[in-house]
Each structure stands twice: as structure tokens, then as C-alpha cells.
Image (cartoon, rainbow, N blue to C red; front, side, top):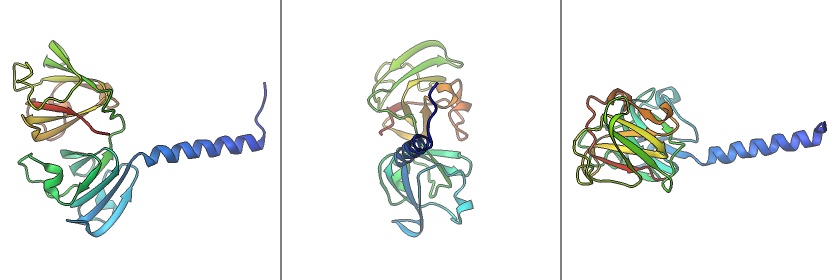
Length: 211
């Protein structure tokens, strides 16, 4: 059995470090304490469970250089969720979109690592615990009912690949729920798994997360 010499070991360590840096570079976000990119700012390449611990009072504007990310209303990834794809978010209306819910700041965020827009598939189930009639989709649907889903509700979801964002109402409006293949083994067995702000299994539009 051949053993590595010191030079080979150093080279392998450098390659591993370079790979880690390249992976970290896939995700980059800059946050500001005030709207329109004013006030205290900080750049992140990793998740941040509580911006208050970094000396911020809140996040009110964001630039996503490499993503996607998901931002949360409260620390420790609690409260309303908002998908943050590559681009500028000068104020809360930019990330809340047509939600109709006023969340003026975010307090935690993390990267969405499994997003793959060209290879995404999700299975919707008519009952909780991944039971009942099911429907597999691989594309964006601004109205699930228009494509044949017979209810305003999706009781459970299985993410086969990629990452998805579901919306409470048609046209990508209302509460947002992020569904990822690499979390919960991709299985969301009832609305309690959708997010801490979920009080119903109402989902009427869904799309793939852009990467």
C-alpha cells in the first residue's frame, strides 16, 4: 500500500480547501439594516440563524449575488418564509411580492442548496402522510386547479428533486412555503411540516426555485 508523502498530503489538503471555498462561493448574500441598501451591511456565504447576534436590529434590504436563499421573519428560521433568488431587494415589498402580508424585515436566512431548476420534480398528494391520489409535476404552475388539481388544498408533498416554492393563492400570491429535497428527506406529510407560519394546507400555485 502506497503512503502519501508530505508534499502530496499538503496538495490534497489545499485541493480540499479550494473545493470548500468554491462551494461556499456558490452562495453569497449581502444584507443591510435599512431600506435601499443603507445603514449597517454585512456579507454572508453561510446561513445566519439570528442577525441580532451580529449586531443588527433587522434586515430591510438585500442583494443576492449567488443563491438562492430563504429569509425568515424571526430568528432560528421561524415565521413567514420568503424565497430570495439572485437579484436586488431594496425593500420588503421586493421579497414579499404579492403576498399581501406586511413583513417589513427579516431576522434569519439560509441558502437553498438543492435547487436545480432544470431537474426538479414534486409529487402532490390528496391526503396527509403521502397518501391518496397523487400528481407529479416538473414545471411551474400559477394555478394548480387550472392544471387539474381538484382542490385548493395540498395535504402532503414529496419533493423528488430540486427545490420548490408553494403559494397560498393562485398567481404566486399569499404565504410562501419552501419545499426542498435535502430537508425532511423531501417529505412534507402535513401542513405542520410546511413552516411555522402554516395554519392550513392551502396551496394553489407552485414553481421551481431558480438557481
